[in-house]
Amino acid sequence: MYEYVIGLEVHIKLKTATKVFCKCTNEQNFTDLAPNTHICPVCSGQPGALPLLSREVVEKAVALGTLLGCTINTDSGFERKSYFYPDLPMGYQITQLTKAINVDGNVHFFMPDISTEKTIRIQQAHLECDSGKTIHEHGYGILDYNRAGTPLVEIVTYPDFLSDDEVSEFLKELQRTLRYNDISDADLEKGQMRCDVNISVRKKDATELGTKVEVKNLNSISAIKRAINHEFTRQSALLDAGQPIEQETR
Image (cartoon, rainbow, N blue to C red; front, top):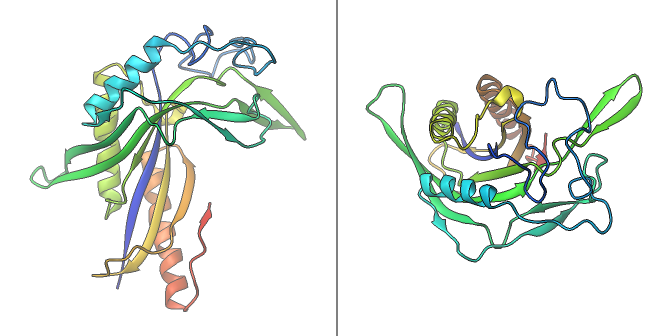
């Protein structure tokens, strides 16, 4: 009776020597790194610090855009996305919205039967800076800014996925592409690849999209598939009961 339609926002941690706007080391594994040891006045948001854009970050972003079949914009720029979290030392995130470096791409891959080919359209793959990390322990919030200012490319797809298996195979193909071309290690469990799922439910054979619900911070392909199926069941039950779907982040 119902079907779901899915779009993804996939955050890729670029494998570069330094952060986006400073010379601090872009560590790939934060598990054993002492907190606040890879920071400087730029990435910790101190007044008067002067940023300098990394050439390698731009080159890796352009390489990824090329692999995704994107149009590479020779004129791109950054904006400030303001929100006030403790792990965001500047009080805003540096990101791209209106002038993204990569736009209008696509990813081709085969389903497990080897005969079914799928194409997912990419709206854009833009550069942005990651935030730091807040750790909650014993009633305290502890801040680690080692990750702040590290380079991300956010890949935004169109709502072209019609099954959780399509999402799974897309992410596997993306991982293979990133690792083979040394753009990212793309380890979901280490946060090098993070995925937000936008899912809506509609009646079968309908053409209009339903109300979108975003499920954030999923760190494994199995968790992504479970979240999709849970959200499909939840939204379908609401529709059966005649209740509206609220647009929200979960």
